[in-house]
Image (cartoon, rainbow, N blue to C red):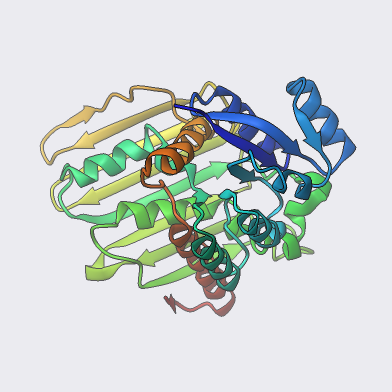
Length: 341
């Protein structure tokens, strides 16, 4: 199969990993990179000698040979740049969050439909050999009907991002859109057989008195049909990066955990246990798991969707749901009351 010709917009700390993933992918070829700062351009050229590197991403959109464009920019730029990519006739892989509000998500979905282009959102946890194995076991009936999930993260504070954008609430939208958005997506994914969420109640606080909008601690209860619910909790006031997912159902339970010195480590520890109501057994995970590994799978999946018509792991509609869940959670934090979807 001819590799999909890909371009990358954004070459910060996470964008450089996207570039690496495209180089490592057997189904993709990285042919161009757009980076705004001279420092990022120099880093891209050093890491990828001979690569076409430009300052203005719009130069890449005029290249008819480019098929897929991967956007890894600060969140406030997703809507405008995403529309430019789609209107140029390119397939779009958009980092999460898809956009800062539902109206912007709708614009992107509508434009992709009008242009006949693919729109995928970077919820790479769905491709994890660990978190994905939990979903596969739920689908196989390993725990019966899912009733409860706990998705919890203990980690060090966020990186500032280029120019400190991640600590500017006007650019980030809210911090729930930064990382808890992955956990909202996982919860909805794990409860697919139950139905879409119906309400959320959330709490949060900050250790920075002068920046209460930057929430270091966050917890939410997401209610699903039939009484099922998920608890999503995160702290940025801790150390390292440790994530746990616990899921119980009518006939059993799953317990998955992942730990690393950093979120982007290549040497994590991880495990998955299954309780069938009588015995607990360790479930083998066949390959390393972590977002640095799942990026390659994400690129492969995008190329397979374009070339073979394979389903996207996370569509624009999935991305919109994740944004909506985060925004309702933030509304609940402000009001102190449950908020319905």
